[in-house]
Image (cartoon, rainbow, N blue to C red; front, top):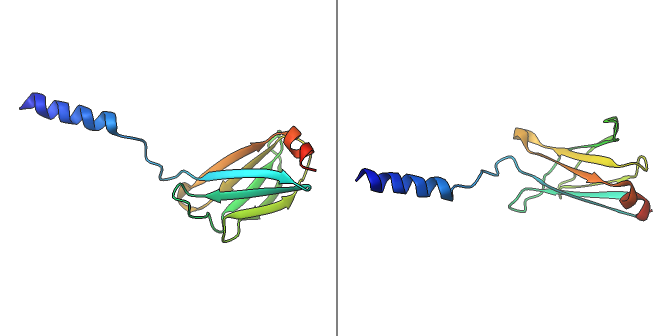
Length: 108
């Protein structure tokens, strides 16, 4: 009986996956001198009215804004350096995305 319980417990632990409770997906691209960001939960729901921050490599805040009801945010490229894009919503939901300088330059 004890072996069966231990086996069931072991199988349960091996089959467990980490919770995605605070996971957010963030995708960004550059086109026509603009940065386009899309943020959404793993189930596809948009991250509405989330705080967007864009940082330089020196962690200087270059731009701040809010996503729309589709989870999107668009802005002009603040500087042609590698940029870290961050999105934050309530309850600890957050994500970041790095846009390389070459991506910014090719999207002019």
